[in-house]
Amino acid sequence: MKKIINTPNAPAPIGPYNQAVLKGNMLFTSGQIAIDPKTGELSIGDIKVETRLVMENMKAVLDEAGMTFENVLKTSIFISDMKNFSLINEVYAGYFNEATAPARETVEVANLPKYVNVEISMIASL
Image 1 (spheres, rainbow, N blue to C red):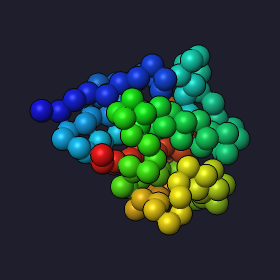
Image 2 (image 1 turned 135 degrees about the horizontal axis):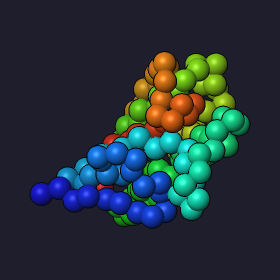
Image 3 (image 1 turned 180 degrees about the vertical axis):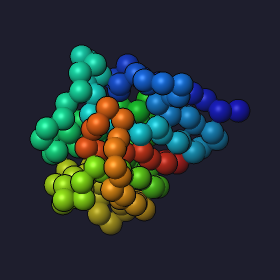
């Protein structure tokens, strides 16, 4: 049976989905964008600030599932402009131990929800 994971410490879903689903020991997260969970306001403009908020939102989802970034096996990063890759990567790298960092892909896309600049999803395991 799957367990739905939702926390008020990350943005509420803006559609027919949940923040994450736990099946057995595997956690599948929805993509997080830079919405401040306290205010519901979007935070875009400075890509490093935006990325940090995305990662903090993801941290809250992982925490609700009893996990940390050490549990993450794979990440998917969607960005609106590959020119921002190094700045996004700089913030992202601060959340992982390089020696045990997860597998990852980074893809440039035409648009993202609410026209944000970065969206990140993860797969983790206990």
